[in-house]
Image (tube, rainbow, N blue to C red; front, side, top):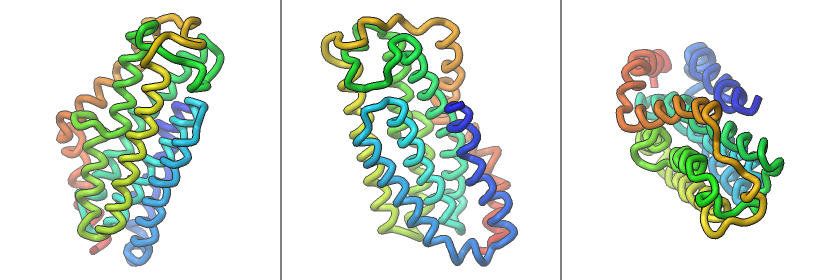
Length: 247
């Protein structure tokens, strides 16, 4: 259910705004664009600070999901920018791939050790190196490492929104720094150092679990290296949307 929530259901709101509300109410869209951008940045920063306080790994991923959806709001608030709205759609796809996989991977260790407490693990890289490598790959995607889809989506959002909301975008960049901080701290506690806590109970990720996330990893890397694989299909629709709004 967490995977369905992160991968599909969270996008229902942003999809509804873009495909229904924006074309039906173009004047209202332009009128409320600034509050939408402000809400987006507030979500980015507040969600990131909440992540900093989490001890539960699943809650950390969940609140990071809330934070990352703020980029969608910031991108769509740039109603006159094809790049900004494209970044919103790109983030919707990227977020579904990355956060869905992270929820699956949290479930993998919970199934073995029956705890999601970050402090209950340590040195996982020594005990379960394959799982650790896959988990860190998706974490790096979520924090926006260049070459992965998370970087492309956030860059497009900032590029498109900056001409309209330069101060707001500058505040939004703080969210990128906070995301790196809480994810890197999680990596340090759980995967580095000597084997500790419940790590000794873990067994390596099995083939069934691995094959459930490999396709997501391939797509994350593919559209991160070749963004045109996705932007080619959304460009015409977004250009038409911007034309309809008349911004």
